[in-house]
Image (cartoon, rainbow, N blue to C red):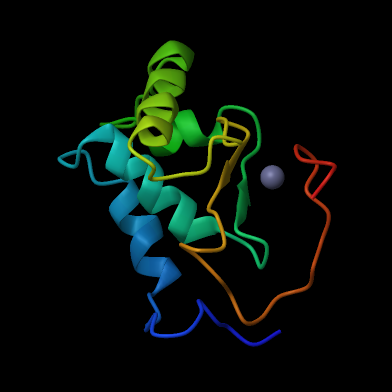
Length: 116
Ligand SMILES: [Zn+2]
């Protein structure tokens, strides 16, 4: 499927590898780190699914994972700011298609969002 954000909506690519790295940089505000993680790990449908505790460990610092509560708070803040879809949770961050599209990768089912 070709990438298209619609008429008069230019787009460019990002390096997901760099966003994965930036998501783990402790000096960024947590809500933005959640956004970076969503960008870094998003699959073709804009879903970034994480194994249990994985997002908390990515958002931690000095090798110490973020608490579950702080992880939930960070995801909720990112949702409030419109940085990730309201359907996001610590198990799967979702980017809406007006923000993110990807031209390659298999359309695989999401284990968190069965209805996509
Ligand atoms: Zn999902």
